[in-house]
Image (cartoon, rainbow, N blue to C red; front, side):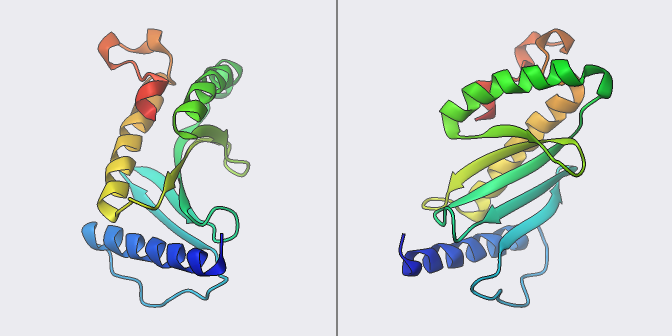
Length: 161
């Protein structure tokens, strides 16, 4: 990708950040980042920690949405890791999203790449809202169907995509 296209996507990311900040009632940016500076929007949304990251070097036409779902209970760690790895294989095929573990906090992190071609601030907020619903299901069930009272609300990996 050319440097010009990368710069266009960088400006598009900043416009999306401004739209999200405005829609959620946050103050607008008061400066323009330097051209080589890494770009990330970090915020609490729906009681979850989010980071929306733009890399002008690796994939300038995409953003990576990261959401920390929470700590993995030590007593269930192996069982939970097996479950999310099974989900990863389906999610990766559907939309490239995956689960990971934050090295510092040990929390389960959901990561979703999104193309910026048709992304707007409102579409990003909508996707983040959907992710928080799944985050709440994680906190309630750890994604195990037998731990959900209402089987109609089983968080299938297909619906997470």
